[in-house]
Length: 299
Ligand code: NDP
Image 1 (cartoon, rainbow, N blue to C red):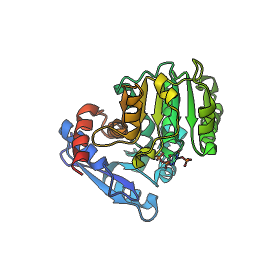
Image 2 (cartoon, rainbow, N blue to C red; image 1 turned 135 degrees about the horizontal axis):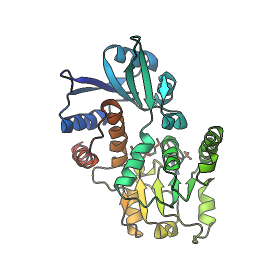
Image 3 (cartoon, rainbow, N blue to C red; image 1 turned 180 degrees about the vertical axis):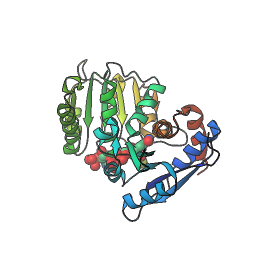
Image 4 (cartoon, protein in one colour; image 1 turned 90 degrees about the horizontal axis):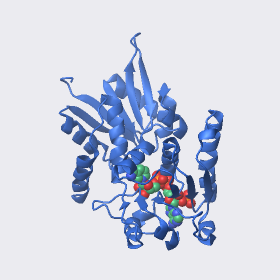
């Protein structure tokens, strides 16, 4: 382990709210590693900011809104999950034999969710999954569910139907172009009216319901009828709170889904995978989630 602290950072705009420094400091503390993790506000060109950081000895960085596509373009090598997402949230530097630097881009957002669903023993094998919402977060998580390979089918419902259709079409095109279309999980996009009109039968129920809308922030529920919740076994809200309860998780519980969770574990999961990219060690999730709940409660 190196004596001098490893320099890390998160880039974005805005950036003041980012919890990444706290999460990574906690990971490093658990491992006995010394790091400096900075928040860097991107006001000019992302590539200039990040190049300067690596020239200063940066080991790796996280990238958040609105720089993930620029980070994708900046990376000189990309993981498959970054290529599917067309967005990068983690960069690592490589020192090449000729003395030049190259940059590996990864996207750990979707796999952060997957890591958390596995931790929570979500019944994903042969599951019928409903994702509510089709914003940036859904773009990140659909490829990871596809990667899992065991989903029975996926429905994405959204207020703006075109955005859900776009995600489904994009994934189908990506896999067709890469000759993997035989492995593609059945997917469909629909609007709320279609779900409302549909009878909940053994062919149309969902095992797992994931709320990827921003509605919980405003303490509002997505317009999905109760019958779907009553048949489901697992509910997950990407939004998170200090107590782990959101309006969505509490609604799901009231309709019989005891296994209803918020998204703090997803946040920690994506950070854990980034940390592993940099240091080759996957930090433990549980103590970090516990620590972050305490941090959030004090804010
Ligand atoms: P976006 O703004 O990209 O998408 C918002 C989504 O919410 C869209 O599908 C939008 O529908 C829907 N929505 C907003 N208002 C309404 C409404 N009144 N009625 C119905 N649908 C509505 O946000 P993100 O995808 O980036 O984030 C979504 C959520 O996930 C947020 O709560 C965010 O905090 C959380 N998140 C959590 C992460 C974690 O690590 N736990 C990581 C990333 C996000 P439409 O397309 O029709 O506008």
